[in-house]
Image (cartoon, rainbow, N blue to C red; front, top):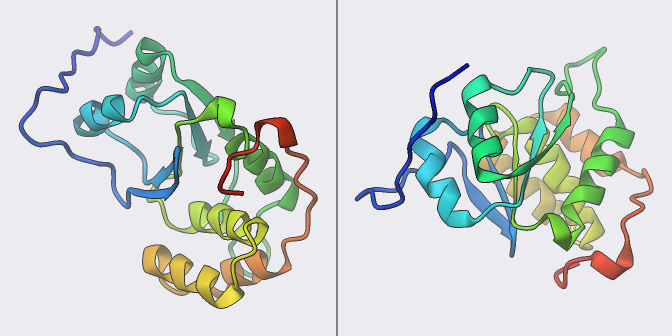
Length: 172
């Protein structure tokens, strides 16, 4: 068991996680947070974290979320790896249901580096927001570079996303 973590939001410099950005009001994306990011995350007032990785949650981060009473939704997703490994559309749909429920906001969506798996999820979210494919791919490339398998996944994503309209965010 780790000793109790102590963090202060009174530090002079706040350090956001790798590839941190706001996706929409109440929704953030990033790479895997570490200890130096905890004061920054506290300032966000997170209610939940969506973790997209087949890796286990790191023990120190698990302790942090428990102490901060942040709910974690862990989707054991491997990234698209041509030619044989593909992200399951059902997994992305399920994660989007959590993103589209304001009761989970503010929410941080993260994977290891905040690039490919997050890029696929955010690209599919943008489709639900009726963004053009050009704009979706432009945003994807800003964070992840060019990965054709992911862009193809976003383009053909057609899984129903059964979110509750009563709790959908205003920006949808």
